[in-house]
Length: 336
Ligand code: NAD
Image (cartoon, rainbow, N blue to C red; front, side, top):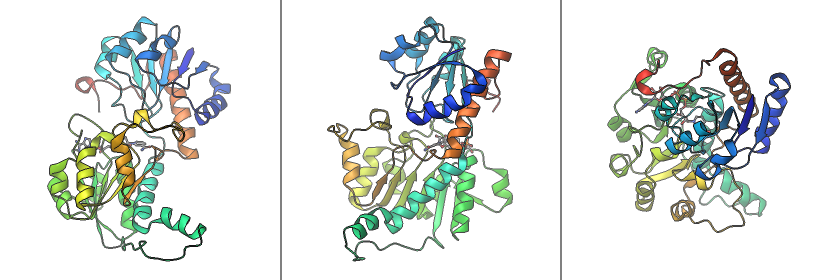
């Protein structure tokens, strides 16, 4: 089984090699992303393994088919970057890792909230500089605040339990409410109610046609002045122009991002010696009340091991038995 792993980094190579003693796949690691210029690299491989910022649209899938690739193994949960219909049309299996550590993402989300509020990142550099003044570091009690959670699946549920522990009131929205949370007394409301009443809004739904730019100028206009918006899900859930306008007006009081609309060109690379060309991203960084991490919410020891294990098992089952339990099907034929 010849496997091409794209967007490889040291942590990917280390975790995969550690497991490969058991599976004995013939693995080639490419640092490059999978996109139209790197399709030729896939010739002769049985499967390709990709991550969140690899583009797997119809053009790429056609190229994969021509090169003999039979499976696309996503080493992440979200599959918005893969054209599932095109893969099915070309007879290529798509598998994913539905859950590797929802705790990692939920805990990082809480970290962004606490850091934005209590300004740990600023306090750290101040104290190291011998500046012990408190001006500018004023926060608020999270206890008693209303937290709006959009998407109450695996990550949303854990996040809700974390903020409940802080004594927050939770308002939830999901297209398919979580029965466990409902039974536990979590209040489900419509999006407008979330926007109107929440002090903190956290996004945990997938990126779909429906959720693309859900946080737009109209959504922001109906939020509380000074609202904190947190996105650890997928960048395009937020219309960056609209959130910049909201920050400039003071309507958005805090913004915490682990994902960004145009992150493919930036994240997972060291750009410290280059001039960043993405003006919107640079503008976001100028706000004192914006905190950005570069898609690291998943990045814990436990999650990485789980990603490697599930990915290898997905590939192994497909090439041994012809199917994997973590196969992603087009919406119409999906069992989900
Ligand atoms: P999940 O499938 O368990 O939960 C997603 C929830 O969103 C479901 O309950 C679903 O019903 C709901 N949903 C679907 N469409 C919706 C809509 N239009 N409006 C509101 N809710 C809707 O997924 P999860 O494991 O909780 O992950 C959530 C998201 O987190 C993923 O889609 C992925 O994009 C993101 N994620 C980010 C990282 C990271 O490192 N930043 C890591 C893993 C996952």
